[in-house]
Amino acid sequence: MTTATIDPAAQIEIDRWLTGPYDDDTKAAIRQLQAEGNTTELTDSFYRSLEFGTGGLRGVIGVGSNRMNRYTVGAATQGLANYINTAFPGQDVSVAIAHDSRRMSPEFARLAADVFAANGITVYLFSSLRPTPELSFAIRQLGCQSGIVVTASHNPPEYNGYKVYWNDGAQVVAPHDKNIIAEVEKVQSVEDIKFGGDPAKIKLIDEEVDAPYVERIKTNAVNPDVIARQSDLNIVFTPIHGTGITLVPRVLDALGFKNVSVVEAQATPDGNFPTVKSPNPEERAAMQLALDQALSQNADLVMATDPDADRVGAGARNHHGEFELLNGNQMASLIIFYLLRAWRDAGKLTGNEFVAKTIVTTDLIDRMCERAGVPCYNTLTGFKYIAQVIRELEGQQQFIGGGEESYGYLIGDFVRDKDAIASCAIIAELTAYAKDQGLSLFDLLMEMYQENGFYYEGLVSLTKKGKSGSEEIQQMMADFRANPPKQIAGSEVVRIDDYKALTRTENGQTSPIEAGKMGIESSNVLQFFTADGTKISARPSGTEPKIKFYVSVNEPLNSKEEFDTVYASLKAKVQRVIEDMNLK
Image 1: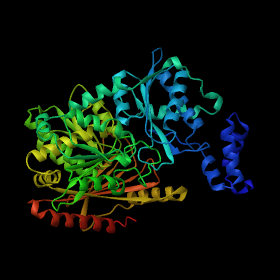
Image 2 (image 1 turned 90 degrees about the vertical axis):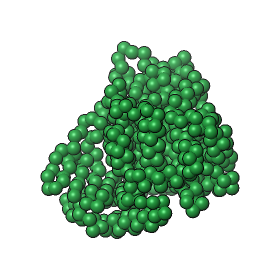
Image 3 (image 1 turned 90 degrees about the horizontal axis):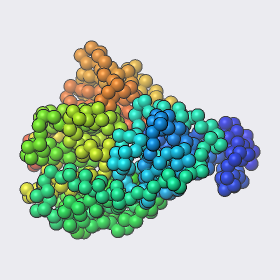
Image 4 (image 1 turned 45 degrees about the vertical axis):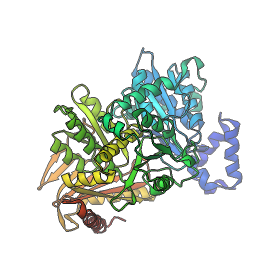
């Protein structure tokens, strides 16, 4: 094999790894790729360093500077340890670490623990896999300064990564995110990484965090009497081979739900996710086994959590008797619809509560909050921004709940990230609430639409791989800014929000969008609002080679009998928007 076919920068890095202080197994794996003539894999593995982004690491597992392995994880953790020690001088510093069911997750978690401990930091390491939201809870419960969870969310099996959290239990935001990146970039050599560990500084944890976490989730219940009456609610749950198995059945049982069945074929944690192509509850295929089981046992509710159990998908029988999966906007809306009503009926709305969601999540939530007299704060995409709002209002206003369209929801503020464990609990409760009135979950959805308008959202996700794909995405955004549409699907564009420039243009007037607080900062997002209430959001993904377009339309729903007709009308309207904007 000749090196001429390999990117020159990659070849320099390959030579450095082969001659440097790397272990023999790593060097053997590199030589194996060379012997196979696998120049594509070699180039991709070494042409750059795996980027430590604002949320942490994510990449394919393997050898090389652009892969998840002992050295890239070690370097990232060393940089984070350096920053933590700098940020909390003279303090006894501690971190919490959790991991999911993915390949190498336990090994990466232990490696990170060793690096932290070697840097004088006390480590609380979960003894086995745990959900991401419990890591967030553990940081606050144990008084840690930081924490990480080893996960790649619902990415394919070949991926892993880790997310970084700060002392409030939320993923890091400014200024810590950029400061951590700067420290990680300073780690230029394997010799800079303290792999040695210190067993005395690593403390294994499990039930001492599990039990209080479960108890706090129980406090979210607004109608325990309804749960008691509907304790036989027929629930099917699948963790899709992930961490949800550790706590979802336990939490549902603790609340009083006694008729919960687990999809056994997906109950065992397995990083290969053998029964699905993708362990993503946003995709129907990932929930098919659960849907089949729900159909066979005439279940009231089906729920599925992703591998690190921060997202949940759910479904129920619709008005035609078919099992229908609710999308993230529908479920986020239903949760807020139920919480606002239940809090009102319980006399808990004092005028000092709030809801938070992301700017690309349905405006139905804004409408419901406005009618209830409860502020709804809109943030950039990412739960770290919702957590930022919670932090800034702590002690002033009480957080009811919130969410984002990508199947992530949060109820209460004892966790500061999306929480599928607590979400499963509240989804079960609101389904019990519906059944207590002789309704299904889908009936409750239609009731919400009748009261507030039928909002329907469509998502177009365009994948543009490689350098040319990245350039194409940036050009699309530049074109939208240079020549914004005057009308979309026959309706005039009356407002444009540009979160990169932090400007709002409305009626020919441009005004600033306030940044620096409440989950808003400069970000490459554009939103177009039309006269008929349509909203289109354009956002390049921060973690994948994609650009996403979120389309939201709405019409009144006067009766449940009109549901199918209005639904068809809204779907057709979304399609007209997609075609008119040439989103392909």
